[in-house]
Image 1 (cartoon, rainbow, N blue to C red):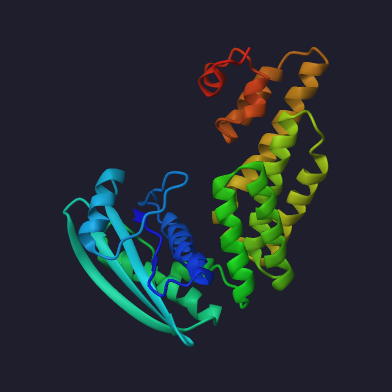
Image 2: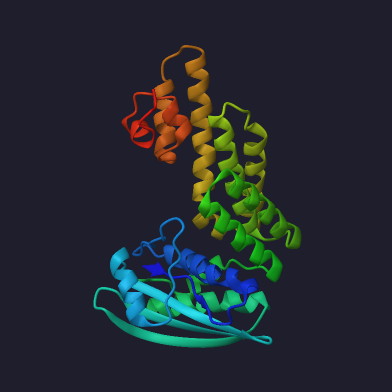
Length: 295
């Protein structure tokens, strides 16, 4: 399954974030289906289409069996969304829908995301995202500003550079300040903190305060929306569990004791490609693939 960024027919720069909101939230919902693997675009690429042949051409390159693409227009208080469901293997459009909702009443747009996902489950045979199941995982906030900051924060996390991580932290903080009950914003903030902590750890700097704050954010998100965090919080949990093994491994290595390599390997199982753990295993073939100059 691949969800494209929805094309902004109104061409208002202030609404470009909505293009990515459809891609991100719908991709999240489809990822809850056990039979579905959601394909992400390559870093820096943004796939959009307004016609099915165009969508099929992109889908063929990405080897997507199912494709959801669309576009939207915003006039006054009305947001009209057009969605197309395409079979990338058969090379044909299976269905099309459109909805008009009031915007920026974000409760309505979250209802729409559920509606689109439910419609897709009826069109695509292998996609099982029933409405009843989806309702438990709605990314709901009543603040349009909080939702916008959350989406922009996730865009920066996707980029992943140190400056992007800092920007993501500020945006997730803004989302939380606008809605203190926004579980996904806490989860995003925790992930950004742990990405920053990973950078500090590689540089030999202390990351403890960042890890502690991320742990608190995960607990807050879990209390606010346990079902959603159970599905979307795994990467944060992996970071935190890997940190335990990294810390144990570093301590054992510093004290000259055996077992440190096993701890770093356990961390790598949780975070494949983790630079800190790889750097502690200089003979690692993977480290040399990432950095041929590694000693």
